[in-house]
Image 1 (cartoon, helix red, strand yellow):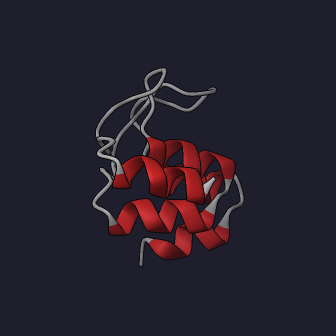
Image 2 (image 1 turned 90 degrees about the vertical axis):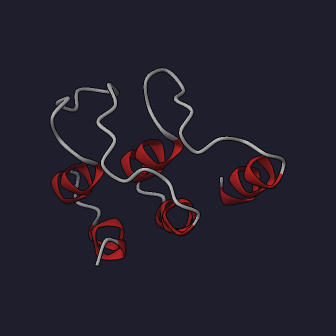
Image 3 (image 1 turned 180 degrees about the vertical axis):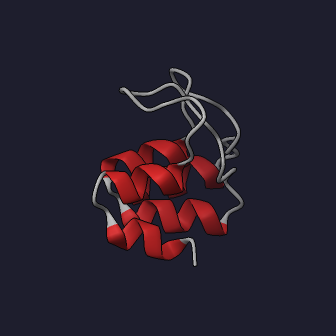
Length: 79
C-alpha cells in the first residue's frame, strides 16, 4: 500500500532493508503495484535486487518479473 510505504519512508525506513529476502520494490513489482513501485523507484530503491521470493530465479531482475508476469504498466516505469 503506497500510503503505508510513504509513512514508513518518511519515518526513516531503509529502502535497502529486506523482508524475507526481498526488497519493498521487488514486492511491489511482484504484486503489480505500479504506483508503489514508481514511488519507491523515485525514492532511490535498488532496482536490480534479486530477492528470493515466490519461484523467481535468483539471477532475474524486477523488470524481468514485470514482463514475465504480464505487468506492462510496471515495465513502463523503467523507461
